[in-house]
Image (cartoon, rainbow, N blue to C red):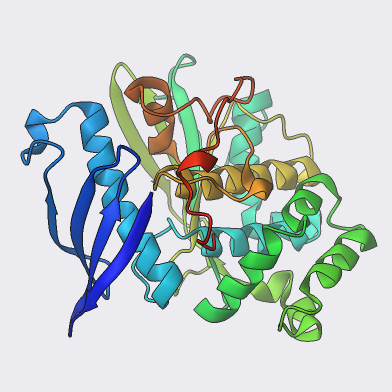
Length: 325
């Protein structure tokens, strides 16, 4: 993938994007991320006449155009909960809490998750879900960092091993804070202020817990009223954990599962725009729910959602050398 901003107007930008099939796209992106125009000669103009692979090349070009404007010009052009910087900030927030404090925020998520795993008492009974159904839990999470600080912070998180430490080190261990401080020092970030924010004050709130299931070809969602804390900000990430994937026996293992899940979501942010994710998030497992079906059925992507699959490419060959992730 590659892109060049050809012009800027009163409303946004005009870009030339070259997709991974070497087809050129002229794409207009408004400052708010809306696509204002899209011209290309490599595929049929009507989506219904394109193959699944051709449609995905077109969609990738649009997503890459939005990402390119966001990364090079700083405008908030990305889709909600599809910004890898914001998701990384959520991973830092959740991963740096003590397991006990994490459960104060997401205890209902943990309780419902473990109820499906080992038959403990749930937040809400769901007798309408068959034992054979695919079940996943969603909950929105927001953080307090502004956009500039988040982008700086994420650049550090994804290149200095902090995300690995969040998943592998107990949040109550002093070594975790040491690793975070070491990574932040010398990168223009106030380590003392951020150290105070890492943890409880980094979180802006959580939305209600939602139980989702798919059975007999139908998808159903049920919001559990009265769950969550408060969410006055737009959500930065949406947890989408399958109930049968992780074995969560306590707050610490639950925390590690969430951090790994969010790393998979960050990975998906890059894969879906056709470029390699940073090495720190080249991990396997389900990220975004809708991407699971892409990986399994589209025939366009490798099975990044499968923890046991052998991956032959992380799309490095399609990633511009001079482009900052």
